[in-house]
Amino acid sequence: VTAAGRVAVIVAAAGRGERLGPGAPKALRELGGVPLLVHAVRAMAGAASVDVVVVVVPADEVGPVRILLDAEATSRAELLVVAGGDSRRSSVRCGLAALPVDVDVVLVHDAARPLAPGALADAVAQAVRAGADAVVPGLPLADTVKAVDGAEFVTSTPDRATLRAVQTPQGFARSVLQAAHDAATDDAATDDAGLVERNGGRVLVVAGSGEAFKVTRPIDLVLAEAVLARRRADAHG
Ligand code: C5P
Image (cartoon, rainbow, N blue to C red):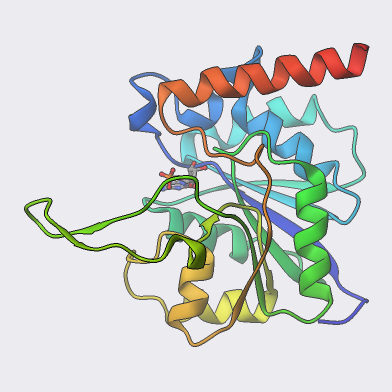
């Protein structure tokens, strides 16, 4: 990648989010009165390094989300809304297909991580610009992790010091991410960096953020509300 191209973020928001309980698609659930998706797009579009944001939503939400985000559009980033697919991988592919030609650095972000700071996107994009093919934010683990067999018996305990819990936004040279998606034939990889690894690429971990956690279970919404409340208090204090 050169200094000439633009940086895009694909925000994957086409999942149904069943683990959060019944109701609207997860990305449209509200946090502090604002849909998760809007929090995520605000943060990414507000990041200094981000030029284009492609939001991938369920096909029947393209129109409504476009209207929702047009009401927001205060940042200089270009905003596109496209329909996604049945799996996260196919949704990211839909986002890739919509990228303008002059984009050469692509970040992929989960709408389900609404509080990931824009500065994290900047750090990831910067590491790609500096020469890495693929960059993921990651944190050391608090818990010990066990591998188990089909009957829940432990088969091994990896050394915790060698593990990282990885987050999004993940960043890529556009050609690297496109090649990894073109080569993928199944949904075994649970993140985009996993596709790059399977395609022989090298992935660098940079420092993640405690605020980039994924809202998956109902208790995650409680934590997210608390983070928002603290941000509001900091802004007014
Ligand atoms: O299900 P999971 O938590 O892995 O979803 C991560 C992200 O991928 C979510 O933001 C979700 O909206 C998105 N996704 C998608 N298209 C799908 C499934 C998930 O964009 N078909």
